[in-house]
Length: 604
Image (tube, rainbow, N blue to C red; front, top):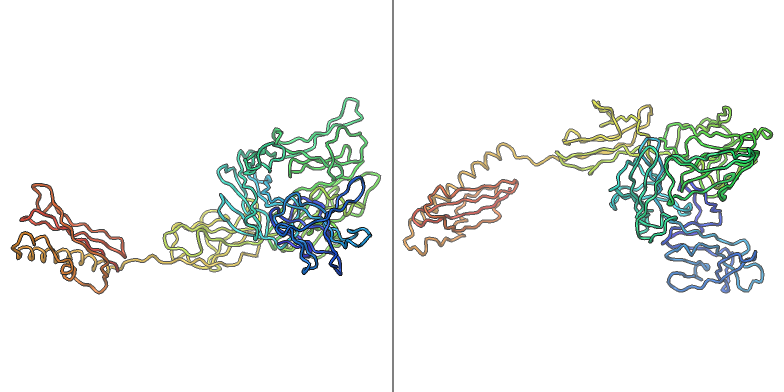
């Protein structure tokens, strides 16, 4: 359950800043949330209210507990619990004394946001591949967050990073979903990716509510075709004094696509026409895919863009986070800074002002580069570049998301296998690295000399006892390798030559002994009626006993052969599936024209 009183650093790494402040809480749809009363000395007359604005006046509506979905606990300082959160629960809440004639909600308001979990698909730098991210419509307050990934509804893995570990190619029949640990029943709708080209990719969602522009039932699937590139096109009008803006994409636009516009990095309606001397910057987005900012003329406005908005880097390595900007000729700001945003509100961001031994700034012409050396997990965050007095503003457009990952070895199907199986080792990361990485594999701290170029996968097929040991991996040009992980290979149970000789001997001795005894028994009995009546227990006692053999079952059957049959028509059958063996010994009697089948099953 989520609590509004929890204080923790936001590590969700969401790309969209939704304006969730210090008195706000974001919880998953379908989950439960606790809102704590802000009064220092709660009284019995304390009540909960929702707050809304009507005709520029604040209206407060009292909340009544129903004992099921909404509960108010006086024993817990009038904490209100809302179960099975719905979108309609999104509101501003406050706790106040009903006898207080002043503003009941002054200074104690809590803004509750209800989030949907969604798998977002982003174009990757490698052509015809995409990356996946487990995202929510607002930055979740609860932390630490552990993400669980599913493939074709089956559990894959869990990790602290919201990014899926692999780059995805076009696989229409493969579906992906995610959930948060503790909320596995609230999975994001499944998605599949198809028609991946250099210009577009199509995402099919299992739930229609993911396609807001399409009028279809919520539980029916829907598809959206996304462009790999989005850009603002500027066109001068005939009179030359105005410009028209269009949001162009690398593939044809459809009604299913939602296009949004931003003016000075704030959400705005689509612009009609812009004066040629306008000091305003514009950008657009198709769903969650943003274009660069443009100015009608750079000399009149501020503009900030980033070379890469998503960076996956290895722990211990170095990274360059680059921005490109323009500022008006009449206002050349010398104050330029980077912010590290690890919470949902900008006020809690960490401003990077001074260079240190690990952090450096470089400015070249109209570009500004932040370099971070010896990366560690705490460097995972969103980085935003600011110019002059605009520091702390621009809440709507994302900056650069950096995910710092370590290396881990994963065995598939298991870390304990049997000789002869196929085993795949993966050098895992928490986010997808580029495909051109070269890897080095180690067994018991010794590098493996492989003939082929080493990749993040190492296949042992078939695996043998010689492959057992501690494996680790690392990326070339980096000193730090993954932690070692042990592969255990169990030997197959093999028969020794001595055991094989004993079995062969038994297969000869047992049938011969039984045949001779039955033949002598049958010739010594005169009554035809009793010739076919054998004492099964006596037959069992006549079987050769070997200390290493345990008889598990036996039986005798009489079979009438076809006419003109002879002894050759009855044959012995033996099946060996050691350590359990079965044997059918078949005898023919010329006098009574019958085959007798003696079945024995024994195990070692």
